[in-house]
Length: 495
Image (cartoon, rainbow, N blue to C red; front, side, top):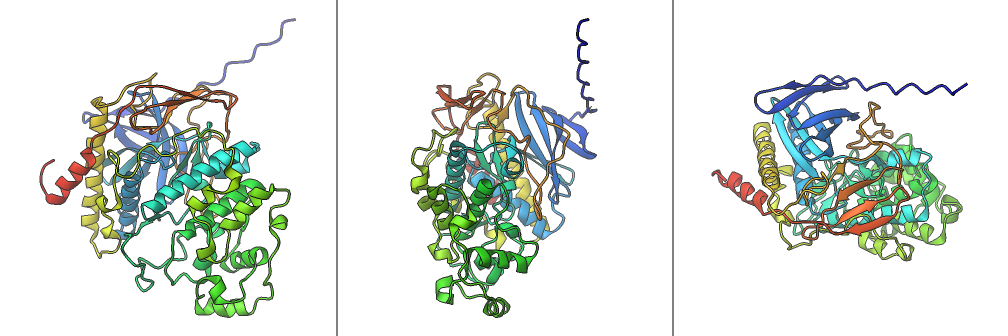
């Protein structure tokens, strides 16, 4: 008797799409209404959070899959408006770097803002929680890209301030993107960080608790440096090794206790590197634990170079903590496989590179009104639209196997992928996950991704076994259209 054939899988119910005369379309994803350019068709929910809803969509013109984040209302108050404007401008400033999430497009409809970004396969939070095995090559490639991205931020005087596994997006080919710049700050290189200025001093709610450094927990009133990000990076690396958070504090006090029990407490304020707040100083004086554990106990069974690298990032005194550049020089990274994307696609001073001085962040310190902030956000929409229009006109770009133009990266059509209906998860106190999907690395699917290579336009061809082959492709770059439009908006004239 012949075996019974399996019934075909149920066909996914098509979502109703309403076309409008202005070239936009409306649809609903997980109960949330979207109105975006008609070239985007919904694929499914990606994540939800306090920021809004993120859906996956397909660009019918390029075959590119993207993540669309809806923020509604666009600006409920001044704090929200600054949060959004800061994120948009920092993404534009850091767009040149392959390990920072790309801003693909922006649009506004009524009182909603739609941010179109690259769609990645997963994030480190999901990977850590999954059964996906992480070998030494995985760790070296992922860690190198995280440090490259953090190094680029710090060279541009940007402190992320909320690095955690859920904000590190990862592709099946191990490409890494740092995302969620809503809590980041851009610090003028010539400015002193004045602790008396509320905008300069650290605030306790900035970094998710599990990844907060000692100076933020014990002295949130004082000025800070980029080393706050390196503590978070050390916690992320340790979490990938342990497959569990290193310091999963249940409360502020418990978080401090876990750090003291493991890292120990320096005997003097000079060795701490900062002066604790009065209540924190009183608490520390009552603590019995001073020495801490050995790193062999904290990371049992780990290779010596892994332990040494992480121990240099998780130093109590921020001035003695390794920088991103110093960490990249660590012997652990000797023999790192070729990265799945360029280390840096455009260098400072190169074509279309924006400096911190060319992207205005003065609004962060100014007492500026809500309506003016809305106008600034609308200006960002116009800048992005003009840049997107130039890309679409084919200036210096070529279409390769249905992918997006060079200089505009993203996850493109792949076998066995697709946006599911399952909602993304996030760790405790997380504000959600952007543009993530799935939890596998080096899966059986095969895809091609254009890296941000500027003139070379090389493609990375990732095979099912994780092999990496570089292929030549047509490439190009963008003009300085964004800068021209920014100047026009600033001067109050037409571009």
